[in-house]
Image (cartoon, rainbow, N blue to C red; front, top):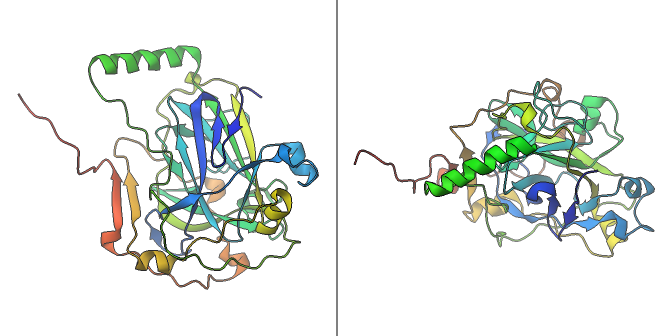
Length: 342
């Protein structure tokens, strides 16, 4: 399938220079709409093929990578790309953007991909009106996953990524525009950093990891709390993109005991709790891009119920961040200097 896909200890590197990092974060309440929570470092990644005698046979058949998650742990995906790329993101082979079944083709109606580097990150499934609903890890078999609620069955689990590059003519036009921009001494569109917007991992104390049994089932992604985040509409014609994907990867979600059984390494401790983070005065984020159009809500995802409907109420107390803790990113950059007549 297309070009080579590589991983480091903390990132997936797809063809076209696309880099995806899986970020640990705080789980939001399932009521209300919230700013972007901070990044708490990356999930570790390992190649499935390196553990042929330890991974489930189905994982070995799919290939790809594995990472460890705790039940009800939240995550977000961080993206970077040196040139335009179209990235499909699946949650159990349900498109996180359109809610449609996984496809090897790009679609515009509805759009079933993200446009990089314009889209700096994705924290969950598209819920429209400038919001998403947070990715939260839950076991397969309960019906709580996005996959189970949209497709009616839980077969795949995990996360799927697939990248499409610009076609030859469209890439040539983009490269010519970049050369012209350089000649005019204009800065290129600034891609968002590939790391967490929160920067370094905070030093607040971690809470004890939840107890999980060795018989814990495979994990998929459910829908958690709602946050302010746009999923941007593609402004290019669909014909600008190659018809075939350049690369893809299956990301398996292992429980903490599975991770240790397979890799021999202990899983990272559970993320810090929300109260400790907020009490420490550490930042949350609000980001928007006034020049980009947000996609409407995806109809198949509109009726996805939060994981709390299956797993019960969240017992962790919610401590909302103060107004001074929410840092604004994007078009309202206070450092931007306006120009006028000379």
